[in-house]
Length: 120
Image (cartoon, rainbow, N blue to C red):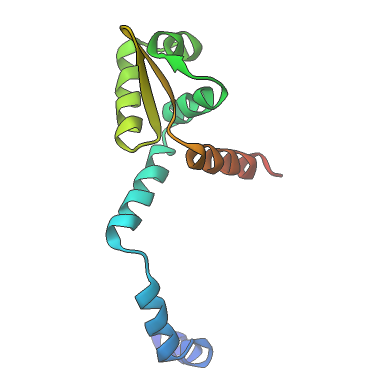
């Protein structure tokens, strides 16, 4: 079986110089890991709900607990995780901390993936 796959590969594969070009243009390991971390963050339904809610409006932790019907500790834990990945940012007004999406790139990624999932 391996021999058959190898023969097929020899007939259809790109030349060595093109493979070398692809290797040189490969994204750095740190960039790949960072991108994987963002997609990993989107792999949790609670974090997806938080991101979706913050896509609509900047909110404090208390308001997020009411919208998502979850405890403050759980919401705070997820927000800390998302903040460490620069998916959300915070803004402090007095003692109240408001959360929003970090930038428009996060919004675009999320909206694109949401449209992809909803696409029939």
